[in-house]
Structures are given as structure tokens and as C-alpha cells.
Length: 402
Image 1 (cartoon, rainbow, N blue to C red):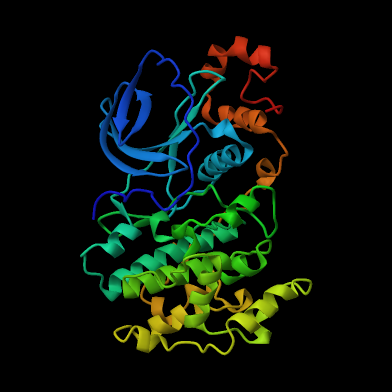
Image 2: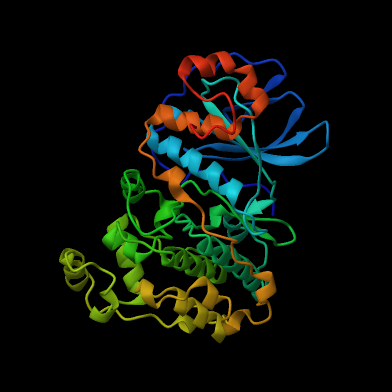
């Protein structure tokens, strides 16, 4: 189990990259699968890990310390507010979150000046991701499946207790080590509450296969209403994929995704549609007329080698009605996980994440200023003091005016 697969599940046009800035002293360039990484000269490139629309990731070694880590390049985060908010959100959340099943942000490489066209996140290095494992010839025992899903649920318990909904949980975003430890990654789409903001339109319109297949029914039907239950649906999709070694719901578009879901979990009863707002009768009518009378499949028929408790957990996670889905807290106490469940190993967050950083109505330039603040040290601010003064930006990290 080694390497990350190419991040090719985002079939959208990529804007032309801006001209590469002049290389600052003490920095070096490394070409990795068509991407130029501009990192400290004592970093040596080990291998390419992945590439997609949002960024590219490669493994590096610090030749001064011998430490190995992953470096994620986010190109041109200031090109629009959606990209800038996604970049800022990932930095802020990975800085605030602290759990052994969530990838740790080691540092953000300092920007060369107040004008920067790329951001580099340095994180822990993992051996693979769950997508690679599932698609490999590596045998997966029930012990493997139990341990993987247990760790995912531990991470979700912590996230949800911190008022964080991941919203993009899928095998590609579950990193794995050879000892089967997992860590969730990619928090650029995370949110902290049910609701809606301007860049949710982009999220809801996305037709990325790797995201669509793990979307909960309420996301498809009501779009603007979601809770932590969307992550629990995704966890159920991953559990089913671990059992069957293939995605559970493989819709070709969002309507076909709904058909794929109903073909397995059945057409929901009227009582299971209470989560759909009364004003959205179109969604209820669509289900009644488009997919009437479909019955829920028998999990033991689909997965004849699966244990009864395994099928029961799958059933309780893949409930059409989000209000009937198990929470992370309850899922960890399911009989299927009794050999792993230990409250002392399932910590909650010490408090809720303060999402005020995500609610600001800043333009791309204002968001880039906040990204600069997250990446800079006081020494960097001292270096850039003339630029900061000219722009009217604070010259101290402790300033409340960032």
C-alpha cells in the first residue's frame, strides 16, 4: 500500500496559472508531475502523491533533520473568493483540530512577500489512501474493515463535537499508513452548522464523481439543509465499499445518483421525508413519481460473507432520513465495534470551533491578507514592513486588525 492515486475526480477546467514569481534566496524548484514546487533548498523531492484542481501533493525530505512529510501546493488561492475561502478554511481548521485520526498541519511555508500566487501546506506523510487500498489486491479481513471504520467514526465524533461537518468524506480523503492507522484530510469544504453561504452554490453544483457518490440524499434533494448526518451517510458508503470493494452508489449525475440510492435503500416512506422543508414539495413529488415502490435491498444478499452485526451497522448508517441515521457517538457503541470501543480512546473536542473567520464578507484580496497572516511569522512581517505599511495592513501578528 503505497502512494496516493492521481486526484482526477475533478473534471473541471483549470484556470491558466499566473507567471512564476522570481525564486527567492534559499529556495529551490522541483518539478513533480507537471507541477512546480518552490520550497526551501534543503527540501528534497521523494515522490508525487497526487494532483487535482484544488492542489498538488508531493512527499519531501528535510535534509537538515531527516524528517519526511507531505507538501500540498495550492496555486493562486486569491484568484476568487471561493478558492481563497477554501484555502483559509483548511489552514484554520487544521491548525485548530487536534486528533490522532485527523491529519496534522506541521506548518505553512512562509510567503515570499505580501503578493503571493501559491500557498504550501506541510503535513504528516501517510503511505496511501483508502481508495488505493480498496482498489488494490491487498486482502481486507473483517478486522481491517472494523479498524478502519472505527477510526473514521472516532474522527467524526471529535469533529462533530467541535461543530465541524466535513462534507467531503470519501476514500480519497481517508489517508492510511501501513500499520492501518487512518487520518482524515482535505477540510476545504467543511462547515460548522446547517446553513448556506455563497460558495455552497459551487459545492452543490459540483459533479465530481468522487464527491457525488458519497453525498447524502438530503444534499441532493434539499441542497441548503445539512447537518452532521451527511458525514454519517458518507461513513456508511465507505463501510459498504470496504465490504464489497466497490462504490455503493455510482450515479452518473445527481438525478442518477438519487436513482442509485433508491434502488438499494428503497423509495422512502412519507414519514422518512420530514427533513424536506414543507415549501419544497417538488422534491417530495419527484421521489413519488420518479422512483415509486422501490424496496430496500437485503444487505446479507448483497454481501453474503458479511457478519450480521456488520450489515446492521451499514443499515443504520444508510438511512434515507438523516434523523434516523446513527450519530458518531451511537455508531461507536454498535455491537459490530465492541472489540474496539473504548470511551477513553474516543475524545471529544475541548470546545466548538469559532467559525467567525468563515463568515466574513471579504473580497479575494481581503481573504489573501488573512491567508498571509496564517503563513507569516513576525520575522516575515518585519521583512515586509514597507509593503504592509503601503497596503495599510497590520505590522504585528498580535494586531486585532487582520
